[in-house]
Image 1 (cartoon, rainbow, N blue to C red):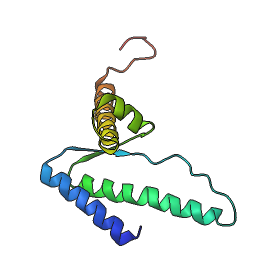
Image 2: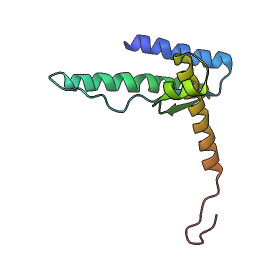
Image 3: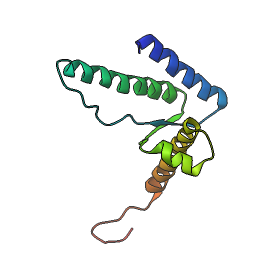
Length: 125
């Protein structure tokens, strides 16, 4: 994917979020590591890193300028769990599951930030 196309796609996503008045965008994390070997191993690793980090950085910047939060969630088994939880086609069920995980992540963050801190010396919060 070229930089111009990545910029266009992330710009469309940011404008869509702004037009709909959203405050949170959930995004799946990429796979951890792609295995590759052979002569083109270095090039494959470099290209995969660019394709994974650049769109996320562009999206983070665009959403951050508009005060929209970006949450990344692990997308493992999202289609399988989405099919069990939602009566939707595969792609829609996966998207709904990733959105559900994004909301759960934001809820978890809000609860842990507001939680009273333990004072180690006294053993109470």
